Amino acid sequence: RGTSRATVEATLHDLLGRNLLHVTPATIWQHGYEASGLPATYTLPSWEVAGGRSYALMEALWLDAVGRAVGMPAHQLLGGAVREQVAVDFWANRPAAPTLLALIHEAAELGLTGMKMKCNRFGDTVHALQTIAADIPTGFRFTIDPMYAWRSMREAAPLFAILAELPFAFQ
Image 1 (tube, rainbow, N blue to C red):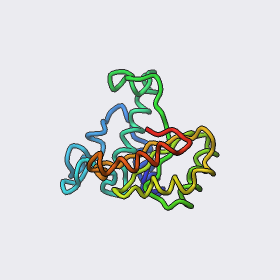
Image 2: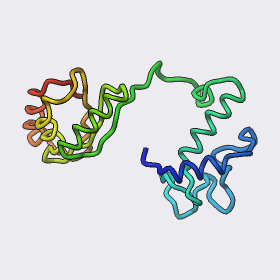
Image 3: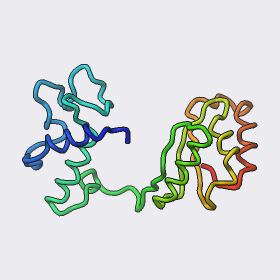
């Protein structure tokens, strides 16, 4: 998510020909960098690293490749699975109603049945959903993540009242 095609290609190209059993994500790009492979000026959670490569992508590829090489799923390399399934939804930030509706239909065409999105303190996402409610596919559900935008129950209650009137499920 949010990783450009060029970054994905640079990351994959950099891994070609390497024996991933002889390196770890922490050492693969260590040349002149911190142990994580990130330049010292990068914050550790950064998605981008030196040379236009993605550390997070490389780590996922490494876990998959090493797991396949030793005949076990990647989750076993991390200590085992913590759940049987992982829910996957479409994601949107806070688009206007027409864009949101187009994204919902795109998600449904891909076979997804839910969407996670952000919301500002004024309920921009709530009002967009209210505007397009009649055109949303039956059974589609939403997770609204206002983070810290909804500062109190007093501020959020009117938004919850709007959501309660809409014909779909929320988390």
